[in-house]
Length: 190
Ligand code: FES
Image (cartoon, rainbow, N blue to C red):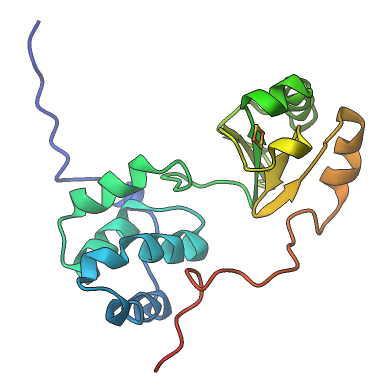
């Protein structure tokens, strides 16, 4: 067996994806005073990038590395560690089905199978119209209301297969009534 060296320093322009806008860069900068180092603002920076672009493109990771004054590989390390960050385009809404024990005992597997059939996609895929992507995750912290799933940030509890058509056709199925964390919104200036 022989080892092959892969040169990752050159990436075709079309594979870099979109970069950060000036507004996103500015928003990331507003997080710097909160932390002892720029590097510590990595997670909010990635959330801002993903919010703006829809995923963490290579160009956005490079932009963040530049802003945080770290090597691009340090940004990619974080992106590929957390399943919440996507390295390729995802659907407008991400459906996350719980695959842990309590939900499975209450019918989570059946809900997942029905979703795959209704959407015509498998896990980590996106519907052709770009509306939904489907993934599974460990416990979503609503074990007493299994089976449950999230659509973007909204948790749907005690989901039955027969509820799915109603849930999927509801345009507000991802809307939450509480304010989002300020991890997404720039902190107040003091
Ligand atoms: S086991 Fe499904 S939310 Fe905890």
